[in-house]
Image (cartoon, rainbow, N blue to C red; front, side, top):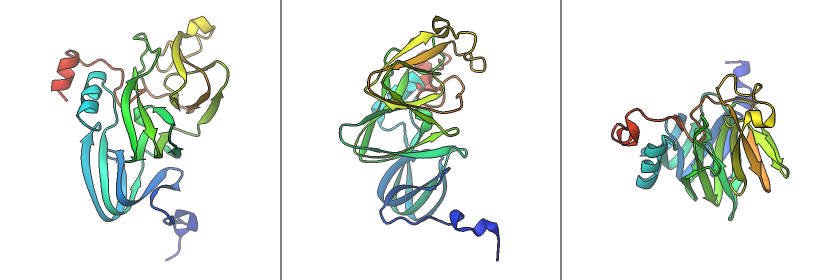
Length: 244
């Protein structure tokens, strides 16, 4: 059988070491020999002896935080030995290696998978105010290991060595050592130019030394840290917890 479909670039990529690798720009391959955490529902194929276990937002404490904030990463634990392929609506996939002492703040909607050697928590983004449609919390990762994140389109990585501003729905991750804040767009003279599609009237600021990753797409309101982030639950917080 012959077809351009069977070209070398479409064949399964083999790696010499287990862990997270890119099958292509839109698909993650996990060569599993142990366990890895992944976004629930992101599996598109697998081979071998793999067990899948739903974990909610990653433990009781994180589950409670996710219910109170409407945010978090719906996780499943992959364990066993074999190959698992993960994707999220054909979004671009990027790998980031964290070393001891590194800490990364990530929008929960952009987390695809991470090694179990990493730890994460749901933390409030500094300087965030209730005036924004964006979420108030992000997932902060630390430790040593690899994380796979997604972007809608090819991002730009901005080095923050001077005052830096981004649309809050486009900034997907940044060095957690950066100081963040919010400014009304009209204070910067661009109030009539920003947020016509999302209703976002604010811009996010970054200061210090580090980086921020900005994607060429605005997520709909409700998401610096997961689907539904920042949106108030009907019936109050308790109703959101009981109704989860």
